[in-house]
Length: 183
Image (cartoon, rainbow, N blue to C red; front, side, top):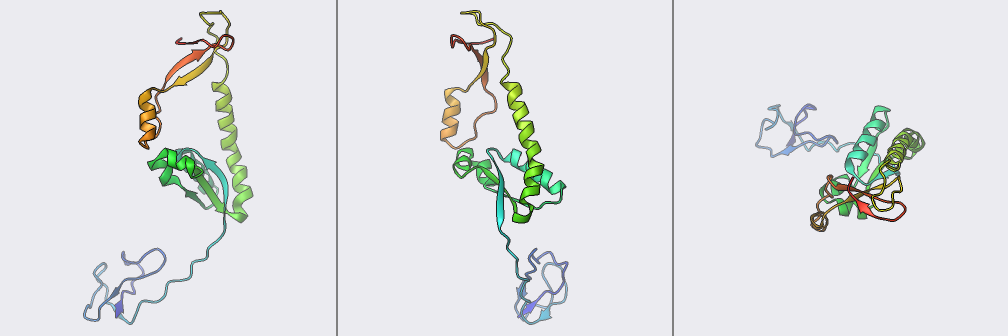
């Protein structure tokens, strides 16, 4: 048995394992280097660390943004369930959302960095929940709240495993009498 000893060979994987060849082969099929006799050396042992969940997100793009913020600060992180939530949003929610995980020793620092994301989300939610100045056509009370409605087709898409549509008709609901109407 022979193996390619070229560290720059495209067939060599990230963990250090190399491709092995039969004795009749002289050159590596990927980099054309002369093959070395004997089996390939054992790859170095992988050191596993315990990961801690620092935040869960309902949508993958928010999790990727948070992961980029951690990467910019030099914190390695891992996203669990990101592909599941991206392919079938309801299954991602059932699995606990997209979970951003870091090493235990980086958890406090990561939470401090991610607290900025929470503050921005709370600020955006408070802006969207401020009452509007329009008056109700039935009772005349000012300050209706916005109501997002999705049609029956959105429910059908959800049952088929598709993510909910981003576009929704927006109406208003009176805080006093409960009338729903369009502005």
